[in-house]
Amino acid sequence: SQKIEQNSEALNIQEGKTATLTCNYTNYSPAYLQWYRQDPGRGPVFLLLIRENEKEKRKERLKVTFDTTLKQSLFHITASQPADSATYLCALESSNTGKLIFGQGTTLQVKP
Amino acid sequence: ETGVTQTPRHLVMGMTNKKSLKCEQHLGHNAMYWYKQSAKKPLELMFVYNFKEQTENNSVPSRFSPECPNSSHLFLHLHTLQPEDSALYLCASSQVGTSRYNEQFFGPGTRLTVL
Image 1: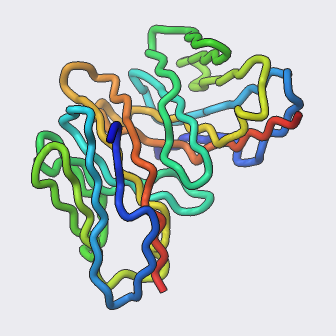
Image 2: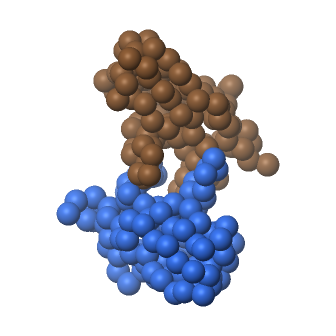
């Protein structure tokens, strides 16, 4: 069956370090993958999209990689700040339908 | 107002009540969605409307009834809910058709508690 896995354990890092979050998927061949940020009690906010033919995408301190062979995306936040503390969700398109299927998210805590 | 708005933000209801959640998008999008988010679980897609037509109903119990009167408004009518229906209900919108890259814009959600 189709599955998206994000590390369910919280990631705790020190301010200024690089945070790396992982999204693994099985039995999908997504055309693209998206990353969202969600703060407690709020709706997710779109951050980045990476297409299947792109290896890497950057936006300010954010970097996303997409390895369709490994079926994995990595999400990096460089020079992390306490304000980056949130839950980060990856999402894949399901079976060319345009519907998004979300992972359960990884909570990042950046300590000053 | 900008983006996607949802009302109410919090709702407490008994199992015999009838209530409605409202969503409005100010982005000119042509697709709207209802998601359910329970603690420690992924977002669950409930309903999809494209151009006001329901295109998806992910085996959602009939005690949840969506309504989309136009491309900017979406409702979720609730009746005889169960305590396990307590969750954060999120509305989202996107523009589909011109691009396959379905970036979705979410509202702040309605925190529903069923007693």
